[in-house]
Image 1 (tube, rainbow, N blue to C red):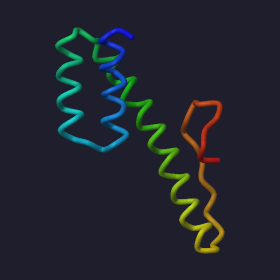
Image 2 (image 1 turned 30 degrees about the vertical axis):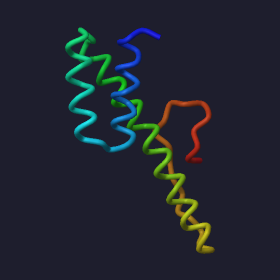
Image 3 (image 1 turned 60 degrees about the vertical axis):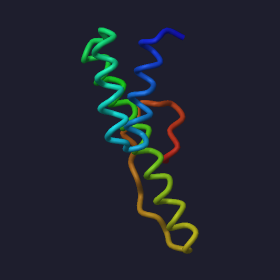
Length: 85
């Protein structure tokens, strides 16, 4: 795996973990590697979609463990196997 791909994964992981210092660090390094801002933005948007699906899934689980009917969630993800439905 090349360094640019690794750095884009690190950007996405930082967004997924809500780690501000990590995101600042990895975006700065990605720019230093010459990765286009559009590619970095795409990694951020993908991470946001994954994080959103995981959040919706966790909310649904929390309500189901309490015996409540969970509200209907809609998924913004383009992924074929989204976990939030």
